[in-house]
Figure 1 (spheres, rainbow, N blue to C red):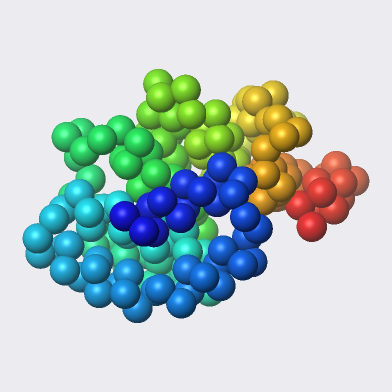
Figure 2 (cartoon, helix red, strand yellow):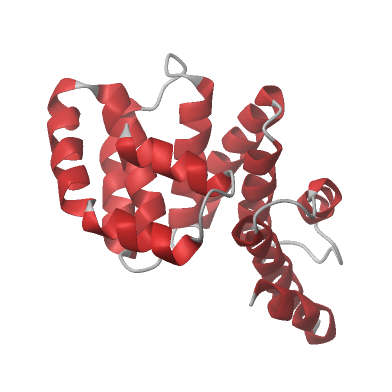
Length: 191
């Protein structure tokens, strides 16, 4: 599928984020139409498209992101391919972290478990970052265990936009604890 392949290419570092997003924005109406069709005819395609479209929509349309994911939540089950479930769980956790943090933590835990089994370090890294973001209001730990693990698996040759997600998670973690001196270098790195 076009959107799924485009998302995989971006995560692999093929191309830059802004041109990729512009190209994907041009195809959004077709993606939405395909998603509506798949809801009635192909549950697996609907789940895949909801995760991919959510990734394309990113911050511009948080309500639409959540609506896409909510509409396919009942379609996500153990019979689907594990990488697809992990991708859906990751996007859902990211999309709902600020409005339903407890549910988001459940979804991101499922994504982390699958990414571990699949040995998908990019996916695991991104999911650990979402886990840190979901947990920023919890506990008083100086460093969240998922933050420590996320930083331990990061590689310098990964695409900048992937590593920026980790830097953003670290900045949010430290900011939530009032440790702005620790957060500042992570904010700069994310920028």
